Length: 132
Image (tube, rainbow, N blue to C red; front, side, top):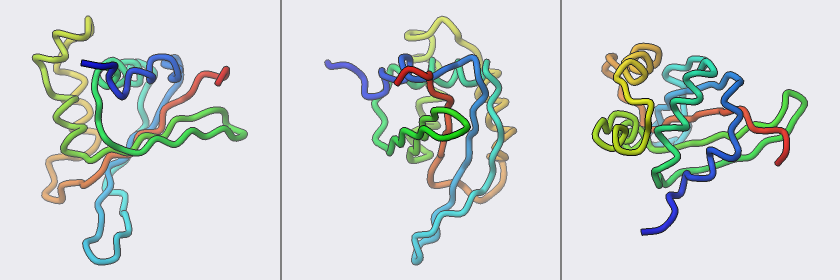
């Protein structure tokens, strides 16, 4: 067993700043992505998200950005795989000291996941540390 693919997140993410999360729906024929729902992430939520992702290996895209607003890490994952990780209570209790259901319930509400249009992808913009 090797190092999880997302282990680097703990070193790159500044969890004292806010982030942003979006669900994306991909049109079948055109391949264009439409934002279904989006919401800001408070610094506490950024911390919890990194706590739940760092021990996993989810195939997805990672973009490092450095612009006038600062450094950012943009992650894009298949939604179902991301949601499996976020809601895997057994693994969360095993790998994190910050166990609880409120984070996933708040995220479910903020992203309007009770609607009938299930997203294909999730895009997460997280604040980076300044020393990349």
